[in-house]
Length: 528
Image 1 (cartoon, rainbow, N blue to C red):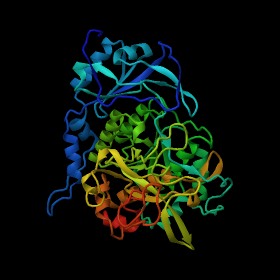
Image 2 (cartoon, rainbow, N blue to C red):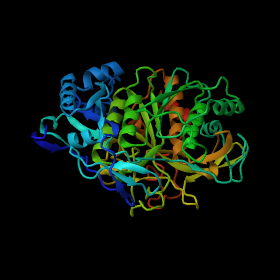
Image 3 (cartoon, helix red, strand yellow):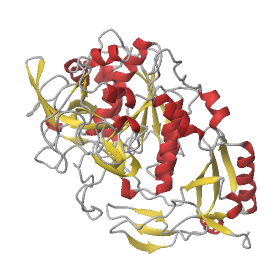
Image 4 (cartoon, rainbow, N blue to C red):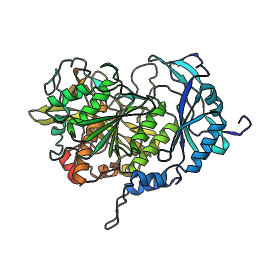
């Protein structure tokens, strides 16, 4: 292999983690697994297929049907000949093929640090992370044999730095709050928020599956049973764990990622109690994130019609190859009628939490910036009696604020043409209650907390979509074009007051709360 001509994998350049320090080299015999992402057998036809889904059908024209997962794999999956070429390369490099999936367009390889370094032309090193712990990292591009240049679109897992953060905020003084009772601010159970937003009361999510992506933490069945019992929901919503890349449903305590996991499950379960909730646990790396998404989207067992993602990072923290692979996975979801909701971040227009890796200027969060997901921004609600009396952009004095802005990576999609100025994608698309000051009462590791953040908005919309899908008898699928067509109608409540420290809300779409928050029954009727 040493004599083969090499080429760079487009978009694979890795930059150093700001503040990270080199501490040495990983042991050359340390074993790892890497995911190789392959091209589609249909070339660029997937994008055209999704664009046809997004285009409004002419009067009397047939509506573009969603593909089944089996149909999609046959039409748009990887070519078996390409899988064979990568397998041959792996064998010559001394690597072991652990798994292949034509539908997910992936080949998973196993080998040692030394073997992978030689096979992909990288130098792997150990770094201490400024936020704690250490990671195996690389700098510069990944290289492959020139004969695979048109076959391989990405190589993920060589670098295992933490890729994303959970977008939730806990109200610090909320310990001990019981579901349904007010904290020092104003807190609500998720079903109460659904009531305030007029979610359909004649649907339960029966027959639908909602997927939740988690990159850490875990859930405890006894907490879920106790929580839903207090809400009067019986039986307890069905929750299943799907383990990706050797991850586990492993609770790490109320100060870890458990708050994210339990928030997501409890929000979905409270508003769509008869839906099946499939939680995909994966490592917090670009490989883990991608593999979790593709596993959920192509899952032929649980077959989710909705995906909720509450993890992300500023676009500048990703490689171009990783964003491209994730965006293509979201296009695949659209083709199969799967709706994806992504939190837009909790640090305002800058998107970086305070710390050594904070970068100046405005940044949008990925994956919310993908044009093939619904980016979810945040609001703060005020309630008088049993009714909403005010709703403004979430921007609290403690620094938490909704993410939003303009992508530097993704061009503006056609459905944003009338409302977003410039040429690039605007974020978010929609909004919902996110401020911890008007947060969600949840149960985490035996304790009650009030939690907010745009993390809560993605599962809230996902639960609503499960209700709508049940009422329709079919998935709404790629919903963004329809949402933008409903601007100014009773189906959406425009949020016009507030800012996110970079952009200001106003009539119509804005880079704080998108097209607004849902008016559930009217939105369901509009999508019927």
